[in-house]
Image (cartoon, rainbow, N blue to C red; front, side):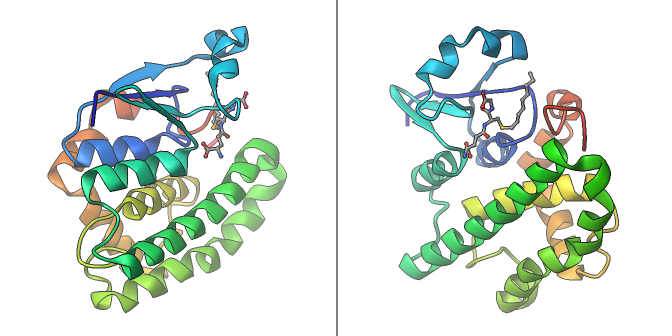
Length: 210
Ligand code: 0HH
């Protein structure tokens, strides 16, 4: 791969799983931070295939769509499972993460005040499929699929991080997921990233809600 650049807003949002993957894999990347003022000008939006960020550069290769970026990095860094079946299961998990991320985004950006209580009430049931998948893989002591970390782990971990801020007790009835978060957070390179000033200062979402 060439030099990596992530172009995104100054939030965790749809950038953080990409950042965690890169940090945990010991990769360096350039953070091209786009604030509201720059975005309002509109020239960058014109360059984006779907008019949205994140945008990612791998040398001269430019890619959009956060999940496509994760999958590209998975192929570059051996994070797409050991065989075709593991790859398919990782796709399944990542699509499940995307489904809940869309519900979370709807809550945060469109329905926060009136929807928060019901969302938190329903949350354990939304997360339980991931608990079950973990249980089926080596009794839940490892990763979401197979014996090695994969791109969907970073995406799931970010989803769990943001939900633990929204609802700190959301994993109380999901012990394998709680242990999974602790275990992944303790990976040395990921830990350094999570404890970095840049990460601690970054808002989760673009409207200040979390
Ligand atoms: N399916 C796409 C993907 O996964 C969706 C991308 C997307 O929704 O990549 N992009 C949004 C930003 S993510 C976008 O480009 C939501 C966080 C918004 C934070 C904004 C903070 C601004 C503060 C400086 N939205 C801009 C647009 O559509 O014009």
